[in-house]
Amino acid sequence: MMSITGTIFCLFFPACLGILAQVIWGNTFNHQILALAMFFFGIEQARMAKLDLQLVHDAQKQVQDVRLQRFKIITIITIILELCGFYLASMYLGWGAIIILLSQIWFNLLVEIKINPNADKYIKPWKITERLPVLFADILGLILMSLWILEIADLWITWILFVMLIIYLSAKAILFMQQIEFFPKHLNS
Image 1 (tube, rainbow, N blue to C red):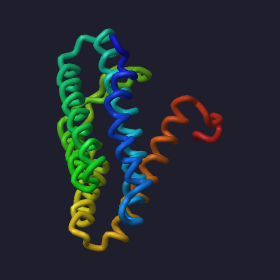
Image 2: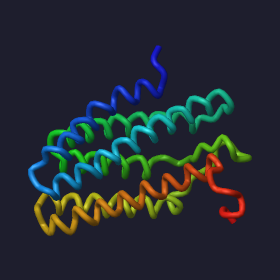
Image 3: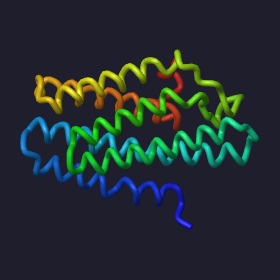
Image 4: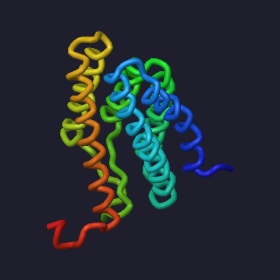
C-alpha cells in the first residue's frame, strides 16, 4: 500500500506539471504570472493535503472523538475538489482557480476542529470567528479571479492575486520554520 505522501504526490503532480506548462507556454504575461502562482499554490495544497490526512490518521490512533471522522470526510472531499480544480486549471486556468477557491471556502466553512499533536488538547474547537480572516481572503480571491476571467483589470488583478499568494506562502513558511524551531528562541518572543 502506498503511503499518504506518495499517494498525494501522484495525485497532485500531473496537475502541477500541466499548470507549469502554462507558465512556460502561456498566451500572455498575465496568464503566465497567474499560472506561476497557481503552480506554487498547488505544491502548497498538496503539502497541506498530506499533512491534514496524516494528522487525522495519527489523531484517530491517539484519541477517540467522533469529530475526527467528520474532519476526515470534509478533508477528503476538499482534496477531491482541489484536485478537480487543479486539473481544470491545467487546461483552463481561471475556471480551475474558481473550483480551488470554492473548495477552500467549503473547508473553512465546515471544519470545526483543529488537530494539534503538540498541544495539551490534541483536538481543539475551531470557531468560525477564528476562520473569518481566511474566509475573507478566499472570498476576495474568488471575486478577483471572477473579474480576471471576465478580463476586467486583469493586469492589476494578476498582480494582486500573485502578491496575496506570496504573502500566504511566506506566512506558511514562517509558521513551518517556527514549528521546526528554525529561529532562535529569543527571536520568537
